[in-house]
Length: 375
Image (cartoon, rainbow, N blue to C red):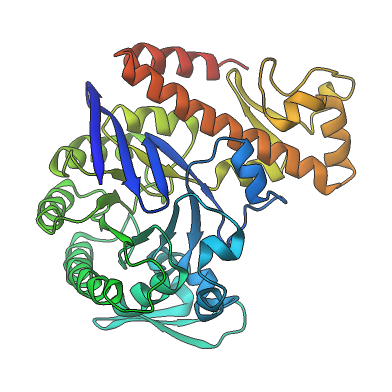
């Protein structure tokens, strides 16, 4: 159940109560594609860096180790030793990202595994069954994520199919949640709005899926090639047509600036691989912009990544030492950078919630953006 606590302009301060605990929003979900954050980060680490929600990938876990294996191990929470909420995506994004390996039909999508080439079929029912086996807190509906530059006719047909798939997802989840051997019979379902950069298709789709009274609503198919300005324009147009009394999730976004701008447009759930991926390459986020710790100027720098940061990296290690680890290809260097970046994101979301609570979000956003533009 989602409670809208406060609005500050369009910005929402909310609280989603789930079977695995309460999520304070706006929230950034830490991405653990194969049930682990890349960079050697454990679930014990996640607890220390203020993670509220972990996100895992339906398609990848279906391929390896197999969702039936996870079910036999008691579900994803037990398997990875994480007792807080988990969101699983539906496999729909892989329809987009594995374009050369798939064929889309009304019943679903025929894939070839990116690992061994074996044939896989996934439709709405299969996606729901896999996610039920994983027993995540929140399941995402199965959709197609079309290219943002797809022509309008293709986009309209794709979105209509995604709507039909969503209705099948809802029916299948209701069936699965009623079965006696379902690990999480209170699994939630979020629908996904699509339509590329065509605002009329987006708005009509948002209105249609809002009628289904789902647990939450995502905006998908953005941050896949369009400009930031186009993304913000679509959010301005679409978010007002999604239920304000349900969570709004912008999938796969983004940079700190993207998040700050999207919160201002009514979004309260986010996920992105940037903090972990960039961290593994020595790029770290700070309140004064992004730093590349490979740079020679940090060779003798005895300061932490960011003064005043309470993450495990900044509490104990210098820029010079972390740079040395990265240059020596020591795993610890990547791990410390990932921990710092996730802590930075999670802390920023905490600050965002506090600013909305205080009715000062616009001023906070401006200060944060100006600070991060410093080099």
